[in-house]
Amino acid sequence: MAGQWWTDDDQLLEVLQDALTITREMSPDFIDVGKAAYVWRTIDAELAALTYDSVWDGGELALTRADSAMLRTLTFGSDALTIELELTSDEVLGQISPPEGGTVSLRTDTEELGRAAIDDLGFFIVRPVPGRPFRVLCQTDSGATVLTGWVSP
Amino acid sequence: MRDDPAVIRLVTGARDGDKSAWDELVERYAPLVWAVSRRYRLSAEDIDDVGQSVWLLLIEHLPGLREPAALPGWIATTTQRECLRVLRVGRRVEPIDPADADPDVPDAAVAVDEELLLHERRDALRDAFGQLAPRCQLLLSMLTQDPPVPYSEISRKLHMPVGSIGPNRARCLDRLRQAPALVALIDTGNETAHRTGGGEQHGRPVVDR
Image (cartoon, rainbow over the protein chains, first blue to last red):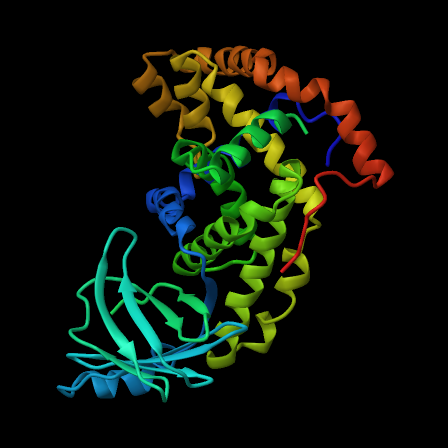
């Protein structure tokens, strides 16, 4: 870092510009989303990160989007579980592995949008597909609790 | 670091369920998360993704944070790691122009210590700016736009003759220098220079995933 950047007017202005640029660029939502995240504090869950989203394979999706049964697949991974999701026009299909039973819940920061049982083979269906972004919380019979990142349908 | 006691208070509060303490933590460190992510040239969407992960990981991490003063380091380190994760999953499916693939990343991986010093400096500058009179704030704000606002427009907006802009700029920058927030930073400046020079660590990131 430069020695005495504050003694020279031009340097000081440059440093100020750098500081102000960050807050100018930051999207207004950025802070709000961070604040809202606090509600997840009481849920003692392991986080599963997005490892695959069919949206990334843009070309294929454009083709399927024209069909009535639009399909999107996503995969979330954590140490305890992998959660695969398929979003069709009217349901969210899911598969957890390793397979086991439990319950699944689709949530926003403030409410539950859907809930279903996970069968012994680790499969679940939640209807309907929520109309807004949600996260998937899986609680397995063996005691694992895993929460995915946000899914924007 | 200059804001240690505040950080300790906020971390303790957020850990004990005080939502306003959490909000303040987010306000204080969102610019750090943003600044680090920007270095990785992520899209706005990806930066949002990184931000979300960092806050959620922090919530998970709060109870285990033994040394609250280490929080800024933890945030910088975690943000870097999340940026790399986003780049990794993105790259697996996106065609990469070999010309601009990897060279960015080593550039982006600025040492956490340096990242924290920059954050501290920017934070003090923003505080000092907030301590200026509104007219100085307006003038300096226009002078730091990118691209810069032309003097003719500044003159019109501030009802200030073009010839006075230069002297006013100097006067406002002087006020900025004397603002308590910047004076406090400069006072610890010698220590800071010594620390970076001597390679002594501070706010050591506690990575314990």
